[in-house]
Length: 228
Ligand code: DC
Image (cartoon, rainbow, N blue to C red; front, side, top):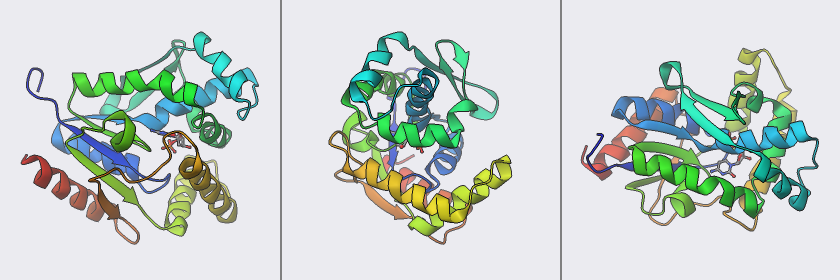
């Protein structure tokens, strides 16, 4: 794949729809690089958290960016590791506080502009399955395949509940439902790059699906669209 045409698959959708797990496995299956852009935004969220700056203070957050270098590489099993000024913050970016802060800072145009080239660079260098909120609409508008992956709010909150329980940092389902709704609202009502299906995106609703069913469906869409 080094010199041939690079193929890009854009997967967008709300948080908790299972995007990252499905996208990672689809990328593995196809021999593509998986790019988790949520993790890239979360690194800026974590930086904001460490700086003690109010995440809704747009000017203050934008002023943090010149002092931040975001980088990434891939560890065992294709795990995307994130670095904040060279420090590995792969685990820290998953803290619940960081999720909420990231939902605010990702609405700031300067933050989005700061991270845009990094994402496009990955798609120029490699065949990718890239997931996020604006991949098909803004980052890779010419992606070969665009998929909008969603599931009901309850399904998404329940998935997150299980995930946090397994990770040993449980949160109540009620709280997670509220957080899911709040993040959905933030993600789809912001002025820049709001979450919405891209033109030409295939809509995939995974409510009630098993993981294997969703993976199977997504691979079928990708293969049909690319002729792979
Ligand atoms: O997918 P995630 O939950 O890890 O994303 C974390 C936050 O980053 C979420 O609030 C939405 C935001 N985000 C974004 O605005 N644009 C992207 N391409 C990816 C994530």
